[in-house]
Length: 231
Image 1 (cartoon, rainbow, N blue to C red):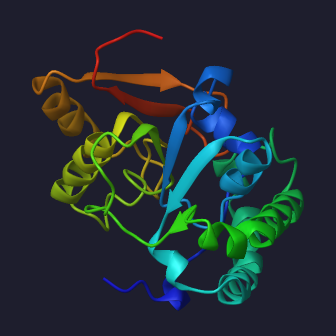
Image 2 (image 1 turned 135 degrees about the horizontal axis):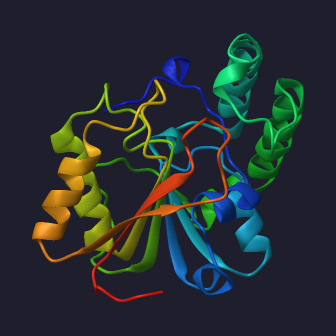
């Protein structure tokens, strides 16, 4: 499926945010990490500078950096206006205001763009989309997905969610998904059913509280592991 850029709101998150959203430890950062639907996040760029291993996969990588930048600036002021009109739905701890949010998102975009062309040549940004990824079995230690699965519960079916999570588990030994809310800030209607299905297959599944909670009630992630181990 071709993703039309005009329908996308590309808002990338930073390494700082990934650390909080996914409760990443120093040990985690040294793993081989797959970022699923990373979009214009600066996570890959910042991790690469630290000598870490991250591959990002997203259908948006069919577009050039200039095209992604143009679309970002097409929508960012609309997003800020929405934040201003619904301030009560958000906690202004990490960001102190919608205007600070905009400045931070611009810095994140700039970090991404500075790395994007090099990263594409190095195969760190690869084209692909769930529920089928052209990656080898167990080729990653950890797969991360932010603001995609569960977030778009009304737009994407339960079957899509389950197939996508199983696909990530085929590729990685552990999967973490954030947040567990849909776009209306409600707990995803698919969450409990997904957990039940995964547990029935012998997987270790838990909901963990995290330190990132810009949207009210957003401070949980789903952690799924193949080995039933602790840690």
